[in-house]
Image (cartoon, rainbow, N blue to C red):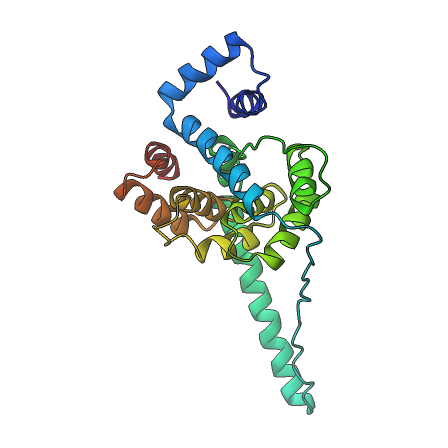
Length: 243
């Protein structure tokens, strides 16, 4: 059963719209792949946890990226050397990117699609106009860009909200903001006390994969295998595919 079909069945199960036939199919899939059952458990925990923490009228906190432009230097000879070195560095970086793209690019993209399954969450209660409901609505519609903005608003006032974090990571992975996903995950991946620790590690390995950081991806996958985490079996398979 492919990832999209599994995701659709999990969503139907969470909203109590799954047929008996599909329910049996989902149970059989869960027997083969334990991450299916764990995804369902995690989805329920996330929605339940965010209900408790929800607040109205959250304020969004936006930060501008500052670009430090070096002060212009005087002197023709210095300028010539400066721009010559800059051109050489640019050439080396460009060549490196091309080589990495040819070596890892297509394979990494294909493997990411094969191994990544977006986390499914159930819909919230109706009748409340809150940031949480808005974020969930856009997430379930597949509008990950807008959902990311909403989850960022939630984290602006609740920076330690692990439920919003893991859903925001999923948004970032779906809109190619991989660096943002990695930044969030590297800060929490070593938190073994969290019930989401296994998912932090798995998503971090996939984020490295998507960004073509293959060695970092392998290191994270080896950690998953060594600790026998939920995704250990998939991590072994992905390591084999990368070698």
